[in-house]
Amino acid sequence: MHTHKQAGIMHMTTTQLLFLSIIFLSVLPGRTRFSLCTEYWSIVTAILSAP
Image 1 (cartoon, rainbow, N blue to C red):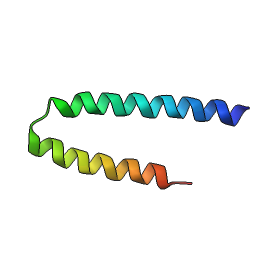
Image 2: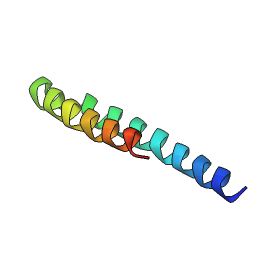
Image 3: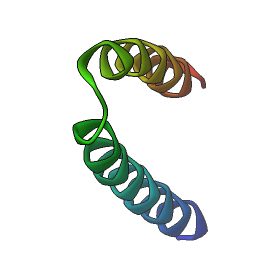
Image 4: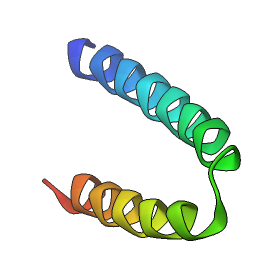
């Protein structure tokens, strides 16, 4: 029960972070956006692959 609630909170936070980052990235110039996307994606991949 406790673990499920924790997972739900994590999911919410991830969704909100993704949404905020999309808004943030959309106001940046192309080159900056690309490098940030690459960096962000590597961070996301690292988080998702973590046990």
